[in-house]
Image (cartoon, rainbow, N blue to C red; front, side):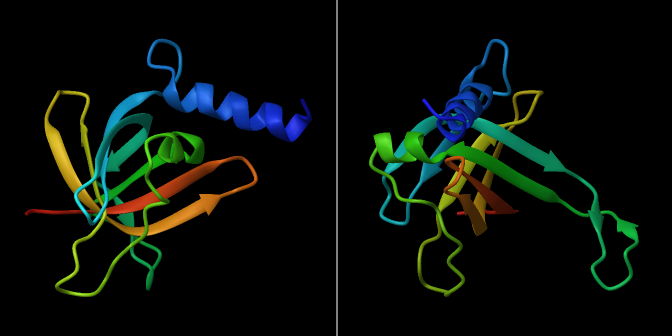
Length: 127
């Protein structure tokens, strides 16, 4: 196994290990309604940087990181942002540390095919 393969394997353990890693339950639903319960890293912070001024402002920045091989193993493609009205988006759900469930839609995905993961930028979503 080469170093790149080892890095991808290590990243998957870090992302999916719920005992000693960052593994957190994340549900992913594609626009066709296919849902999978996966493990990954989730982030939901109530602070953002104003792009025009560079000043920290109150806002919400949420994202998840999921192994590409985990998505493929459950038959899902890489989530993408869908901006067209009338089309169903990719959805992501996870609980925060207090157990409250939050639902988001994917607004941007940043796959890293070199290490085998995708980072999805999220926006709060209501059905």
